[in-house]
Length: 221
Image (tube, rainbow, N blue to C red; front, side, top):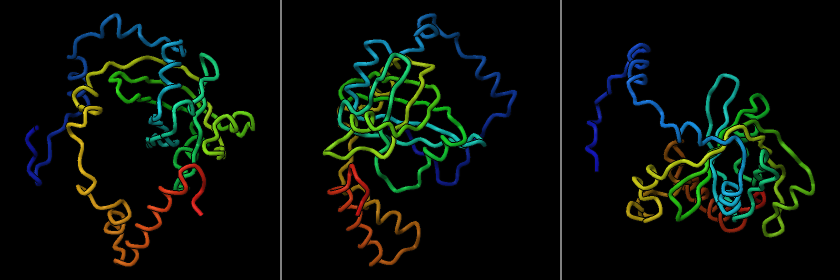
């Protein structure tokens, strides 16, 4: 494991010119890496997306402030409509709607798809619009629950990313897995952060557990 920084340490950072010099000091990109962005969904990328149960979707607002959200579903829920278009269901959540609000002002998106057991990932980028097309939403239903809308992405960038990050992280091996008891529940962590009472934390625990148990694909009652 890498050594920890002391709690009071503040790392030195580079100024603009130094940062440019650092970036310029890296070796040139390999010919293969430069060419691997094919800008479309070929049969290999299509099969990967259709088997994938999770992706991470990045959006930003007009000021460039970024948001990344995980999107998890049974395989087959992420729809490849053609070689330049995919659709992601928008499942019920906490109604912050960070992604949807960003898309109202900035259509640019980027995605990373993961496939358990496979160390390579799929990276896409493009622009997105929202859809309430009944046929599309019906095709995304799980346990009879269709999403309220779908995020339809017009693909500009598409390629496979090498396995180094997932190999280093040992993501699928479980070597670095932590027991559930390593952290308090999310309701209790948020309760601590917001100064809630013990009764409020207990009520939050019950609400979260009920949501996980009963409301994965529909708004929590």
